[in-house]
Image (cartoon, rainbow, N blue to C red; front, side):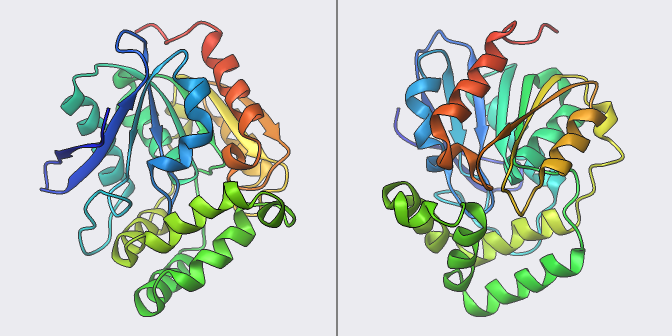
Length: 268
């Protein structure tokens, strides 16, 4: 299916697409800060064998609109719920990475009836201090995405990976460079103002937390805390940095599908 668009309740247009068999259970994927739904390309062949995969560009990213001003995690989470409404899906399993995993944490607390199993990859319940995010917001609005793109590539992958696997990293770099600075800043504000630690114990869904052993952004310790905090959490550690789905695509896919296969969509 080609990319479609729906309009959220505040007028923001959100781009989305389905892939996979029409009669398969739905798996909703949510992208990281600075990327698009295409960050999931390494997983699509494996995921669509078992799922009808629903991807979207977070507001401020890709083909979605980039409203001016600060966003909130509540706003980003409601976008995901509104997407499910727009496409007529009552309930879906969910996999999000980094910012996408933060959206997943919000959904697990605020919209548990819409979510089956949760996969929260390379993410954290809190990413302080807020001053660091404020500095990033001011920098991207002043200087654009180019300085951030190279710094992000350095953090998101282990040191030798970008040179060794240029075909995997090049699309990610292009996503970063193509990101609207205003939209990027808006999502940075959502992370700046986020503290999901108090509500993490309210997540009742069966939850897999994936961490990268060499991730400088969201550490194994962050992942372990989250897996311990939720009601039914388990932790998988992959030999990767931040974008573990790109650096270890096969292992990531196998880990996610193995978790989802253990019982399928959680019953209501």
